[in-house]
Length: 346
Image 1 (cartoon, one colour):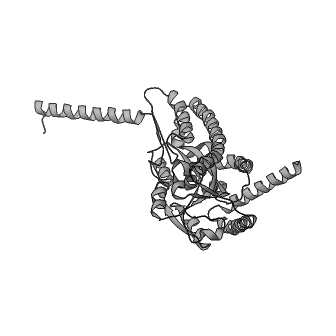
Image 2 (image 1 turned 180 degrees about the vertical axis):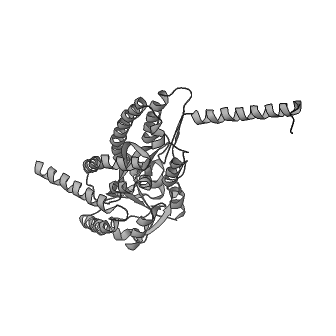
């Protein structure tokens, strides 16, 4: 029979102490409250400030020493990578464009992937609000909670060379999101050349000639200095950049009802601020870049007709690929209803 002696007892005591320390340590880490938010938004931008406002509301409602970290500038990777980090618990929240949101729920792509469809921000707002309840339910079913909706301006084409019509761009190389192979195939089928990259690769790629066209909002082009290497901007509102602040449902369910309500209120306020200010910044950014050498190219009436025809050729390709068929049809129906009612009101 095995007998304990003093040496055995000391070893057993030390082992027990180590196990107790590890148990306390693991328990402490598990109890640590944290909110880590990732995004591609520029540091010190309007978007980061509003993310901080949302985070501070959460932080003030916590006891102990909660940890709030905002990661801007794509420091956590592209939007696809950010979504992956949320799914494994490395991040609890994110501000994503439709590109990242589509990794969670594909139907959201209808708000951004239908070029020249929306003629005004009022139309974007109307369709988004019509879809909002059902869209947020889809996100919840997939383990995410939408806290706020925002946008970042209209996409315009920034290029090294002057271009005003669709044909002008066929000899150029476009930046394309690496996580959107279906979009790249559609572009190729129409005679365009997409180069899949992450947003953080845009500036060096355009400087070296790997790409020479960047579809971008004016604010992003100004903030990242893209316009210095691509000093021609086509003045056409190709599509809105729509986004949302999301958190994991796991994080959300850990919050008390009072904290959830406080987050809802601040997030709605921040979403409104983002939409209001970002829309102002579009023209302000264009004016700032023009002072520094940006050439704004205006399409002629014939050019616009060609762009419209291109968009109409794109819609059948987009329906059922980039945008689910039922969502595509829902957007078209809502938009037609809005335009009909607006026309009758005149």
